[in-house]
Image (cartoon, rainbow, N blue to C red; front, side, top):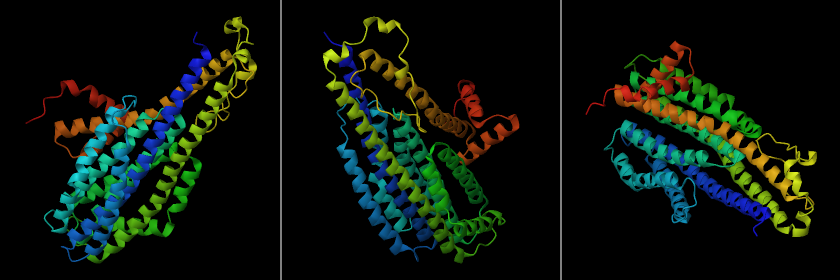
Length: 426
């Protein structure tokens, strides 16, 4: 007859399998982050190349393309290693769909580079194309965060995703400012885009701070050199306060790019630390879970029969009633390592642990769900009011301020009106 211990062992094996899947996903996220960083720099150099009409930055751009091609090969190898025949991956359908989209973009990347190199595309076309590809790569990271079943790992993924998204907005700011300086003329639309990108960075970094470990937050603060930030703020003022069509000093193009790049390189150090913490957390949790599984399997039948059968209806023993959590919502002590405990005590302890994990996971995922709703609401406004992404976000912010409501509440109200909005014009 199958015993309770048998199912505890099965549960622990399932937990290990989920952690191993998270470990593979985390490794994929690590390579994805590196490729995003490379493409962000390639995008900026491409804009400088276009802005100078091909007279400058060609060599730097070609060198950066070579680095990106090498990292892309690593990412494709990660994709190839995934078991696409497995049906046990809970988020497999969404993850594989994201990968299919990214591969389509990567296949088109040589054509984009050709058009940039031959100046067939404008800086805006180039920027929008890179933004679309990087957004697809970031969606892979979001999918990993949204599907994580362990609270601590989920927190790390949420912190990493929001930091990467903030860094992407910083990269778009670098590219947009480079185009403005290279063109030598201020443009009202691009100036509004810059203000939106600056605000978006701050919003993402606030979420990062909320979910990051203290060490990562401290590294982020330390990585931001005061001299770099002061120069960045000075150049931002030059760009954002110039009157429309006012002349801009083309000579500031290189200082702008270098200043933004120094800041982004500092962000890359934090990003690397977050990715490393993620991989280490997966490794450590797999080791703990494996030790617990070994302990379960070592329990003899005689040791598990010592518990009184009627103890099921009695209060939980005090010795197993307290679980000390650490700062990231997981227990600090492994479970099931004392062989003298009864199966009932192990079951009760496992149930409490899963309950705590579930509550913590719900809290972490609330941030991701809010982001989903806000993005859906923005998409709805863009479709029905013919707005840009920046305009839709600005409209929702203004609504929130006027109504003294949170942005997520405005997003929910917008989505609630979806059914009564007129059909999108064709």
